[in-house]
Length: 394
Ligand SMILES: [Zn+2]
Image (cartoon, rainbow, N blue to C red; front, side, top):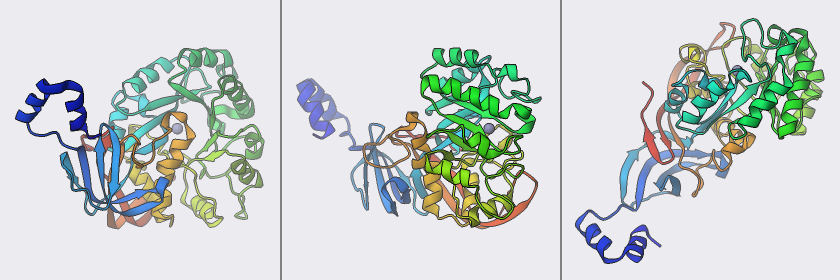
């Protein structure tokens, strides 16, 4: 039944008179016209119109001529599902989620900024976020510390983390274990064991921050279960995912086979080096998800915005559809809070990123000051959240 008929049928003559005087209601709230729709969830890459009603995708068709309260001309632009960033530190600052939203990010995970002692601060910001935003709790009870989250092993406090999750079941969707030597020292294996102990009591995933660990990576991977996430997959040695001969470690391949997710986590320090990325791409081991490891400082250096991070993978020759999949449908599968998102299928929440793909000469920097030039760069152009347009990046 059309919306107008529904109103007639349920509210009778008085409503009819009121509607007859006003303009007739529009069939759709918003139509995005003429953009190149890239929706890996339905293997669609074609110029289409998208109609939105009641906060959901109503139709995706070649031409939608019906009335709409608002129309957006997206000709020459990419229209993709709202980007989902599974490794960000957006809840470190009050306006973090809003800043990410303007970059096209309609789903966010704050990945371990805080542990049990201060998780309430993160949760308050996540709850106030305009888009779905959840947190991973750092197994280190004091969160990210300059001297190392769990250098003092007593900070990896199982009961404190359990208690915090117990109080925030809706908002804490996993446990983060940062395992580099400068973060955990030689405690890495025990810290991860404790993180799993916490996570298993709630059936939650663990995200590990890999790279430059004391323990060999295979020893750590052995503790990971299906649905766990390895972030910073391009971290240089010691303990990369690839050995000196250019072979992906067999334990890494085996971990992926049993359902462990390999994530990018761009960040700014010691996580991404171009020569490692070259070798990993050459070995044919592509990321499952691309994430930013966003911080306020990252807005002006290396990370910049999510579309910029995605552009680096275009530079490495990943097809556009696959790059978008890593930031939409694949990311949505990692955490149940995003279930039904990361897609433009009719009926899905109308979370949409409109991006501009520019051609030219664009410089990208890894975490070690090495620069490379790419021929294409994605820029955020407009964001739609739950069917409503949001203000662009300032
Ligand atoms: Zn991080």
